[in-house]
Image 1 (cartoon, helix red, strand yellow):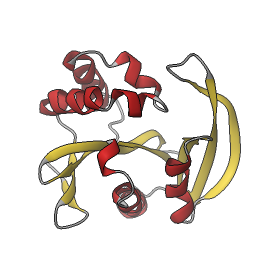
Image 2 (cartoon, rainbow, N blue to C red):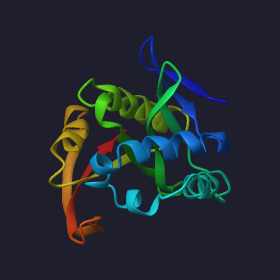
Image 3 (tube, rainbow, N blue to C red):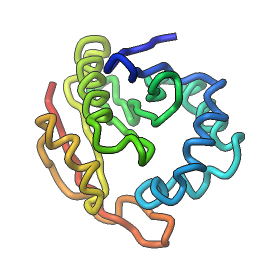
Image 4 (cartoon, helix red, strand yellow):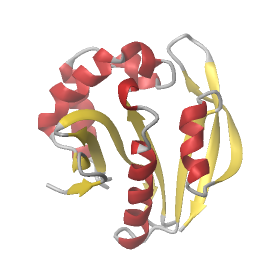
Length: 174
């Protein structure tokens, strides 16, 4: 199982089926905070919902690397590649982090590490990050890491409150 240290206490650990309960618990504990910007939160009602997500990642024909974000072993978030096109050598990074761990640079470090992995291990030439236009903390991550705002995707995601949000689409050539 792949582990990537970020700080002495924080590390990424490759996603596995045994993570279902801790993923569900993290989402459930921060449901109000995470659900504001992440459409999947409203559909994550049981540990089995989290397990179905994990199985969809692990059993996919083209398996993309997804990692739990952990501090001293406790799950505090998730980050990984999605929508990877191995022929175009392009991938997207998605992430979420529990509220109590916000503002410490954890996701910025994790995204930076995954960008290096995309270039060095996966031979990608481009990484994309999509952030709801109103989610300013999430938007600051690609901005800090040298991503360029490419365009705004209109009505990109349906949020829990029934409204669609636009998404800023950031691109970084590797």
